[in-house]
Amino acid sequence: MDVVINTCFGGFGLSDAACEWLAAKGLVLHDPSAYGNYVYDEFFSGRRNHLLLVECVRTLGSAANDSCADLQVAKGDGRFYIKNYDGKESVVYYDNGWSDAYGEDDD
Image (cartoon, rainbow, N blue to C red; front, side):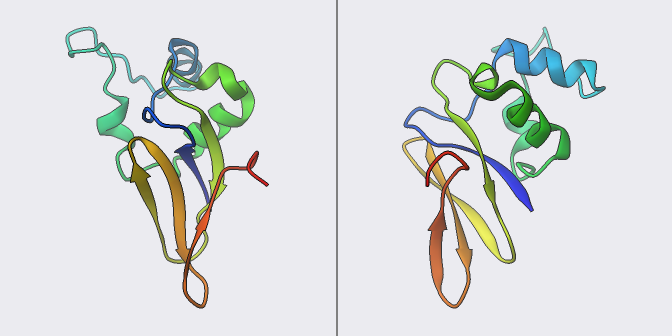
């Protein structure tokens, strides 16, 4: 299973272009009455494996990033959770012990 994580300090965030891309695919996240205009944090909390989110980050690349984000697609196979330290995330999974997995660009 693929999951989207933020690989820099700052925090998970989608650009306007990413929100527009998702809206064009039928997933509208913009709420003009909401503080900050976007409700994606609430929507994607626990749903970082959403197929459209993964496709969006792969398609747009760095254009999907908000100003304080570096979104990457990581593998979340089996039992895993997303570890967060000051906004920088990694996927921690169990494979004969807990270990970290990072985004596709982090070899």
